[in-house]
Image 1 (cartoon, rainbow, N blue to C red):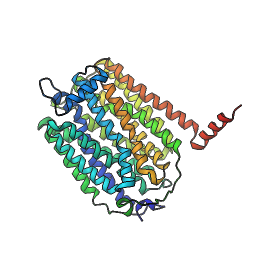
Image 2: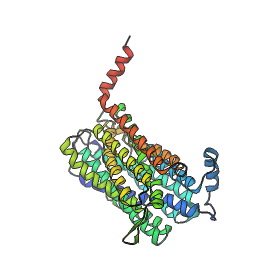
Image 3: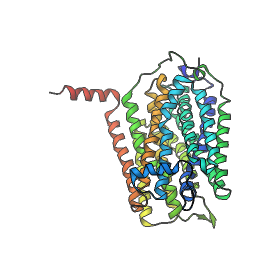
Length: 441
């Protein structure tokens, strides 16, 4: 029997978990190393005046301008970033379905890793930018949801180690988020864009090497006709958590897009006279998230917080982070201290929101739907990045303080929704309320 069928986590669960988390680390190194450079690469290099557009870009620009009107290089680059990032999440339910029902999760993860590596290789040539992004989108769809679903299978919903496992998974994930922009940003600044994208492709191959050391199981090698359903489906909990996470990340995801451009334009990027690549702020984002995960894990054991509590508090931290950023932008401070303090608050929010949301959703979903539901959970990135790309087009049209205050308002709406769902007290109470309303005279 595969690891999905265990009623309790086997002793081998943790070694397998660390290999899955290691694979995710290298995947995040690869994709976030590239992602931290994408908007800068588009604005500074691909869309710079005097240069020809890569294959397919003229048609894409015409389509976007038919919807949004004339676009500056910053606005066009922001839309491309938003569409790419959104589509990497949109395909995740499809990738989960492929892993659940067609080829098995192991084959889906391996194929996805190879597609991602080929996409980074194609990015080293500017002309193939759009096909490269397409390869990255398809590869991410196959890999991400199927990898996280395997983590959920290691620890049943009743296992007290489940939340700890997802928090550790987030920590590994953010080590990759830290290292990718750090190394790729350095390579881009001193050697060129091609070296940075090539390093991202090599990192994904390293992740594939880690994954292939995990012993194959029947669950992940082939489709089982009648998988065991060891927990009931609680749709209100799952859908409510997804809604809160979507709202929170509609604000948060701007840190990989216009936030880096704002830092490049408005912040004094030198330390002891040495230049600091803007992409290193994406690395700081990863470092701070890991630190916040460690702190929140210790704090939660003392405070005994419920998942809905963590969601509400995480959304509040993101709201405060963007409120601080609006204040910094409004006062015109150029020190790196301001944006670093903002990242601390934002990453505290992510350290609370992400594992709590994923724990709620996987705990409320039967195993036969695990890959699909994890993919639907990741759709928060689809909606968030569509919003991020569209809001980015406002960057040059409104004052910076107003721009960041809009993001604080979005996070504030996530706080209100999470508090409302927490007050309803879960599935049974919500159904009782609905029944009472429907039967009222």
